[in-house]
Length: 117
Image (cartoon, rainbow, N blue to C red; front, side, top):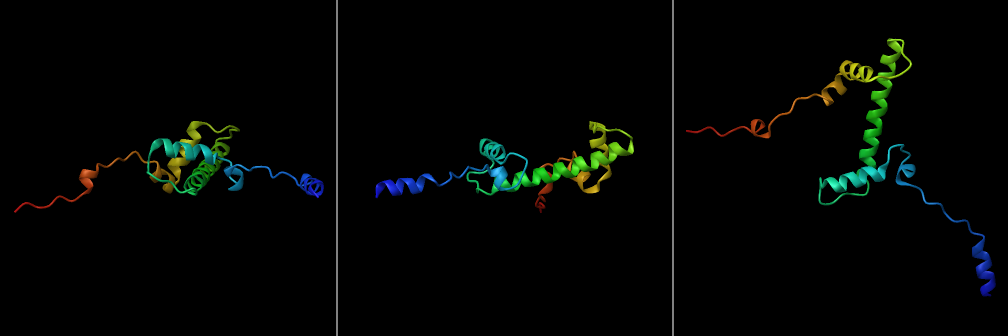
């Protein structure tokens, strides 16, 4: 009987392991984002879905920026995207230009100070 059991199990195919990027259908590396989040110590604990979500956001933003930069390259009759095309694409899009603004505000200035009597 043990022969039959072993014989029956030998026909099973091994399940190939899928990376987290493949499971999430992303091109960017989920594991690398996870490692960088943990090394950066941005939080004591991370959910398993946090790096997947952040990787999806990064991939979405990158795809949009490259699409806009490609349109800018076509406008200037070029086949390659240059940093100037990316910069022009970011400047022409109001949401992306606001996202990549160089404004840094001090937290001390943002908090209203109590009035002295």
